[in-house]
Amino acid sequence: MFIDLMIFNRKCNWFVSVLVPSVTFKRIIAKKSTEQFSGIPYVMTLLNCLLAAWYGLPFISKDNFLVSAINGTGAVIESVYVLIFLIYAAKKEKGKIVGLLLCILAIFATIALVSVFAFANMARRQLLCGFAATVFSIIMYASPLSVMRMVIKTKSVEYMPFLLSLFVFLCGTSWFIYGLIGNDKFLYIPNGFGCVLGAMQLILYAIYRNNKGDDTKKPAEGSLEMGVAIAKPHQQKQPTYFRNDNPN
Image (tube, rainbow, N blue to C red; front, side, top):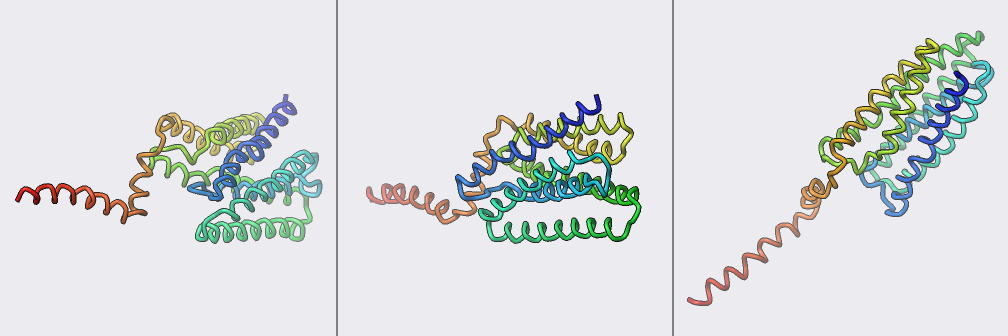
């Protein structure tokens, strides 16, 4: 039962990491713009995959090759997503994502080097890497909070893909249950957090799913095209003004 549940969860993680974001990135490539999509979740998922892949290596923890294999592949895919995002992101957003990317690579390198050179005992290595993976799993799950805030503000779920929210909830829930059964705090703590956040995203989607977001975009477009917005009332007033003058 444990093995079957593990395989199920790995398949869910694979689906989330590879298939679901591909829909978003097809849109980004087609429009040659990242629009209002956030790149932070992809960078944080990259860090999570790197840490999980490192955790599964035989000199860190035993019998976890599948963890390294799947998360190592996931790290490659997430790297491609981050690269595509950087190509099409605006200059300000690109600078923010590059800074975050350098930061997470420095964090991963530090944890990897410390675990190898500072700890000779495998149990301590596993504890360090497990704790780091737990902390950054929570951060990864929390990274869509900015998108959730935008959903509430704009009353539109256009930039919060339903499938991503659904599988975050499903994977978080299944890992949470698995952690409880195995009494593994490194599993049930971060994934319990992810389960709650996934449920919140689904609730937001249920509330705002019928809103197209067109009305919420009009004020922003008007502010960007203020000249056009101001010119139209003058064009409407001029005919009325001349029709009132002609009889005199």
